[in-house]
Image 1 (cartoon, rainbow, N blue to C red):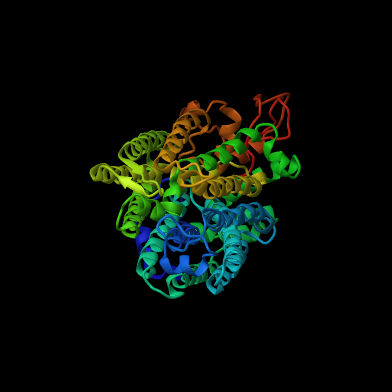
Image 2 (cartoon, rainbow, N blue to C red):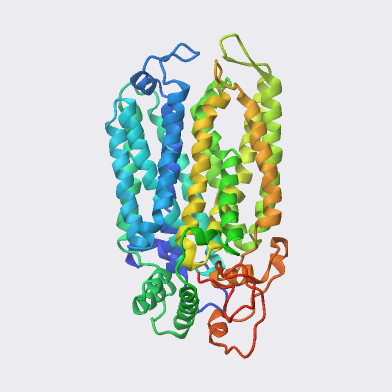
Length: 553
């Protein structure tokens, strides 16, 4: 554990429950380090907002279009392509992640993903015209898509259950830090009148990638992946390292026994395909994972971070780059209470009240923007009430607080917890791909929805009514579909889906016996009679065998 140096004493202050054997600070530090992959995600998505508003970049990449301010620029359709092609790459990257994660391991898959990302950064840095820049954005997105699916997978398979939510949620914190770093660097270079204005922000991404690559060379493979590959001895060593216990310690052997028993049960019902993720009881879980990721995007957060600088600039805000730095800072700070609260108060209440807060904030921003601004004949924004505009920005910040402390981290926490090991890589890849599909749709459609001119909807601030409606849907989605997984092992989460059919009753559910004990029980004439719908995707409604309903984590 020398990799972590002086950071280790800080992690040692994290106290596990008295029933937890060994030390959990290695697993905590490893999970937090792997979350650094979120910096690649956040920085790459955040830096483009400032680059699109840089005068030199607009001059350099313009193909003849002139914006309403009379400045050479890329057209709205070209701007849409520049922003959205990253999300197209991430969509395919997320879907490809199981091919790497299930075959070469979670650790080496993350390392390979970083090199794909570096290829995209190289192409963008070298670009002096749109075609090469677009190609670079696609490959960078492909790498980010791989990372965005593999990081929560690695974290959820290594983190202790009592702090798993905070560790997986730290991925979102890293994303917000990446967004903040992008805003700071864009602000520092946007006045340069040379290629350094955009090349410096882009090339800095090499540093984030190299840090992750070097760190992953020292980290262990996940015990659950090693069990999946029939490497029980290496799994014991890996888990012992994570828990700081000898590989033959009873607590290590017991946890491995749970994992292995669940895995053997899954093998007994056959291998999983992508179609299996939608069969039987798995359908609910798969649609829940895809739904929460889609709704996370539809809350409107990436409208602010993709087009925020341009939007604030067009709305009459003189220091648009500074406002972007402020919103990014709020995004970072607001994530911290969410990491604490998700394991303290649970997933359901945070997601529910977060959706309520976002809904109210988006509605107020929409009303203020619609009633206090107008346009002249050329489409330029006219501000009738400066105080109302400032209030609108304040409520954007309040919205960011609610998002960053709830839906930001918890969407990743939920999708990292609800899938069984048999389908986890595929299920998580489809959930993450859904996030990026909606990310792409929003990035592509926004210029057409917001901008002025023939063929454009010219919604301007009215677009916040769309985000308000999506946030309202989030409230119902949480109540009917989100199960409370606080404090449960991944195997226990699987059992809960088999026993508890209604999400709103899940906070009262308690695990019965260990999966290992269930699997060892005899079957005298229908013992353990329960209908398994959630843990056995290809089994029809019937008597549950010992251990069914727990599909390995």
